[in-house]
Image (cartoon, rainbow, N blue to C red; front, top):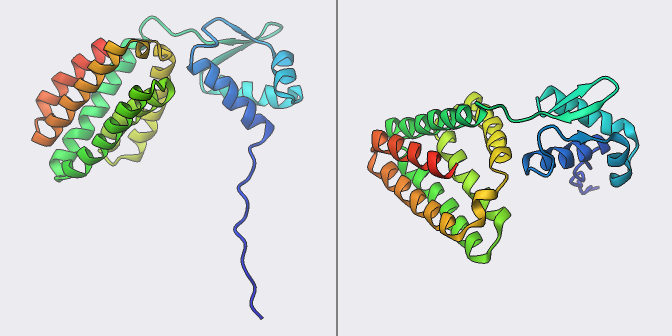
Length: 215
């Protein structure tokens, strides 16, 4: 007698996971700015859940540094510090350049540039369609691929956190101008060329300027 195995259905996210995702997205996209209050009951009513998962989500975001919980006041969105932008850009420059140097040392620049071209093509399509979300996501994927070229899982985790902080600071505002979008594509084409040439120093210089102007 034969039996047919069934693929288990993917687990549905818990109520706390859902609240966490909604709340974090609003912080990262700038819908909730630094200093804004998070109303537990209002959020629970909006999402159709009890206050318990809202409190769980707030606790997670507090542990990650996105919220501060004050007794008798509630949760407040943590403001961006005056030095955070430069700290984030310095960290990105360090990790992305390190990824390219590692790829050059290992002789894997062909694989890296192929993936970068895929993300660049995705950016072009998104900009042509006027899809702001897809454009910013493709841009983030482009830079994450540079850092991931190091093949270091610990650094991948660090870059993921940096990527979120950078997303919050820009809040997609820079992508609203067509001229900026076109220049970013041009910059990315130039960066890919430097990777293909194995010019690590030239890449570091070009990336620093790209981040200074557009990040």
